[in-house]
Image (tube, rainbow, N blue to C red; front, side):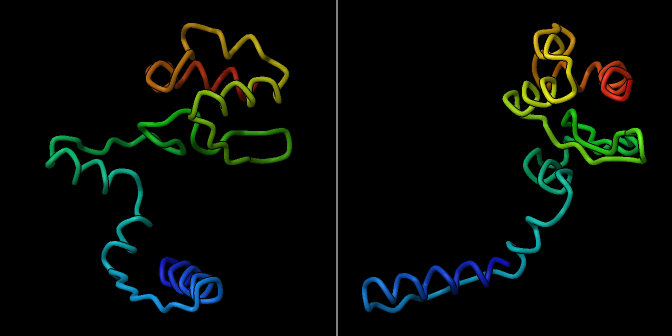
Amino acid sequence: MHGLAAIACALLHRERTDEGQYLDISLVDAYFSYHDVWVQSISASGGAAMPVRTGMHYSVLAPAGMFKAREGYIFVFAWLDHHWIKLCDLIGQPELSRDPRFIDNPYRVKNRSEMINVIES
């Protein structure tokens, strides 16, 4: 995907300017971006951050994971505050976006069990 994007942009640049491009695409850098958040967290923290098991949910983002729905399961990834507000509106519970337990990602992570129960109910 990284190579495809680079080539497509280089071709667009050539079409618009009649100039070529030099592409230097690192396989390791591209591969690194496809890993779970913990690969980057461990690297960025120098090994201080360690992954924890959280079942069907990301451990450092909330809501981010699999949620039980009426007819099975659905993947929800709404950890940014404006996504959280929209999710609360979509599930018919806009007051949740102002609930102090869920006001931002750190609080939603801290109160994950309660948040999951509220979303799935």
